[in-house]
Amino acid sequence: MQREPLNRIRRVSSFMAWLVTIGGLALVAFFAWFWSDPDLLKGWLQEFTQLPVTIPLTPLAYWGSFAAASLPFALGLATLWVTRRLFLGYARGDIFTLAAARRLTAIGGLLLASMGAGVVARTLATLALTWENPPGQRQLAVSLSSHDFALAVLALLLMVVGWILGEAARLAEENRLFV
Image 1 (tube, rainbow, N blue to C red):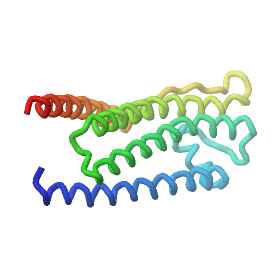
Image 2 (image 1 turned 90 degrees about the horizontal axis):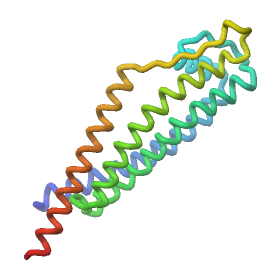
Image 3 (image 1 turned 45 degrees about the vertical axis):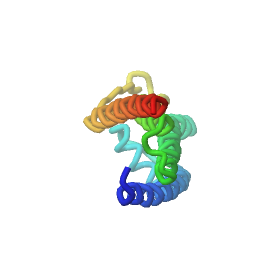
């Protein structure tokens, strides 16, 4: 690879590794703050579940919604961690490697899992918020949005590009052995 493009990749990747790190830490702080602020929580739950939400929440509604939201949150943090590792590798110049290919594929897989976890989380949060309602007023809603579809397409794209990069890295290593 030519020197200037490689230097640019290294610089941008180093910056992105720090940005992803800071973003992940901010996300953890925001998640903690969010679940401790009733007004923020009410607005988010109403948007997330499309249900009217009354504050204060019952313990079941609060902890059930918290548990439901924690799964996609944890997968999102895992995605950021692997993304950070990918950028750190790029910053070292490890671009066309099997490790980079595996990380890119893993990011796609984690994004796909996050999409599925988001669907499950919305369903479980709706159930948690309505579980203590009288019989006939409980709700179970499963929904998919255009955002879910777009995330699935992006995730699958990253997985395929990761597979292609892995094959290219394997072929490059094979060619190096012949020389």
